[in-house]
Image (cartoon, rainbow, N blue to C red; front, side):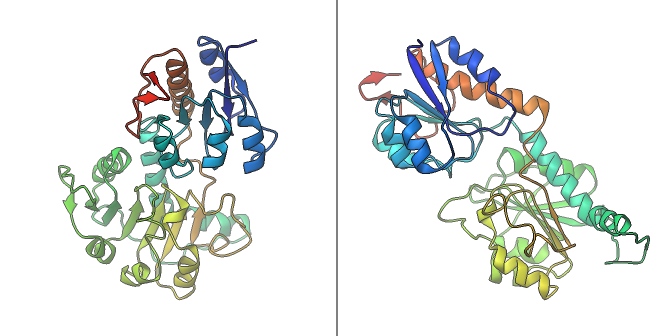
Length: 324
């Protein structure tokens, strides 16, 4: 019987072979919940020494149920599904893997931009329905020379800016930290909305960014502009997006993340031919998943072995009297 037990709340890949092999080096075994509800997670957390979570809501109640919890490891970047404040109060370090899929998400955002700009998805829907009409839909415009507005210049935002510059786009950005990137003009959020031909969201979801793009923001965008979201579904007021599209307020949207997930695809805005929907797939590649899973599991193994894990996000360096 292993010395430690690690709750894995959920995962978006076929199996936990990589995680199991790494955790075994720390004499730890994986505990899987019966389901994804809070009550299921609370039941499974009892007696666990660590928690690894992908997308499941890892609430204070879930964390508290693991009375000997030494670490909560996010198998991803964003932290909005974890009660980080509760962990900090309990002196439990929270870790993430902040840079594992930078290239993948930036490439996905560029693919979505090109898909909308060249009407790839629209033409595909038309041809599969038996239509073969070059003149259908909106007029195409050259991508080179158009303006991309990036909201959030973290690792992914910076990478996307470089890719966009590589195909001749002018890049402007709104970034709360006022980080300066070569060749990128920093502007206010309002100016970004009004000037951009494409608006792409790359900012974390928190209380200040919930429904960051809503009715008033859509009103400031060009009616020829497109919206791209590969960050978090909650950044967009989807009801306002539906209304905006119905009024031809913008030209279209590309959404890799939704709120909730999965959404009802039979309803607007998801069933609109001007909207591209992908199933939270931007982070995925063979390389990124191996890196993510290995690094997240190593953080837990390090913690359980008394070593300092990488990427502690809440500043906790001591846990219930046990120094890291």
